[in-house]
Length: 365
Image (cartoon, rainbow, N blue to C red; front, side, top):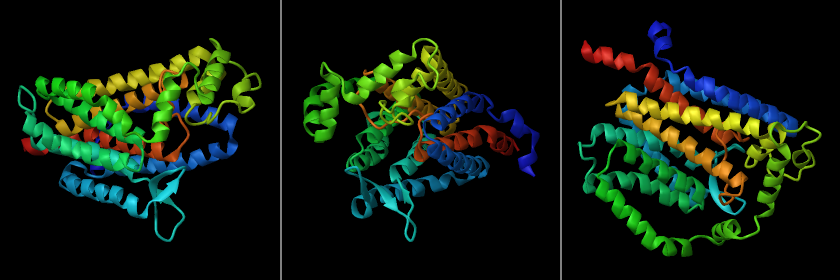
């Protein structure tokens, strides 16, 4: 059986779990201190995430690439159905309820891995020339990037929509697009930025105003106090007053970076940031070595960009250098949707890396 083939071990990328597991373990330790109930729920997310990883790691993805366009359009239908059948929470309609159950799904999370697979599928079918994609090819690829962006933005979920759009265009930037196109886009964005701002929702404008105002918001103030309180090496649980006395808002998810800083200080945060940096650099290095394997390159680049954007925005938000948005730290912030989505990402990537030899040897034969 192929599952016992020794080449699986030699092709499996062990660097990924070596960098991710310390982040997960530290996250669980912090959440256990803050809230035992959430810590117990985390075990459920760990179990589901591991099963999701195994599922995508073991299925023959390369043989099933022809299904990717169908999956993409199913994802688009789910995003469209949110507007009709969606459930509203905190003023945003982003969830669909599974019939006859009390469980809900978030189509925008389901769309993320499908979105990258679709980009990889399209690029593999039509690789760029030496000068990069022309305007016609760029517009075609942009359609598949902007369609989910518009639908997710309408929910409204500006954060997720922007992250997906940035990831899509970052992938195209690395894969190759004519330089004149990027210059034109940059000039267009500069000219149209006032119009874009005027069309934002009121709460989105408020976040920007809070960010550029002299006084940071209450959440950011408490976060900065917690970071300062941690010092170089951090405080004990009882001395971490911001977290212990619940002054720090959403300490287990949006502001877990500040919570980690209060407990383990600058050293603890430096440790986490180094892990993220090494993971991002490793993923980008994979894209360099993969050369013409476009589907795997797109997944590696896309996941690397996602982790970079998520970690950059979340950390900047914690220290007052970015507006407060609901973007989690991958594998670190509490939450099932984000954790399971990234386990899906890494399951797909490990599958494409580990079982690549099967396709190579079959082609040679």
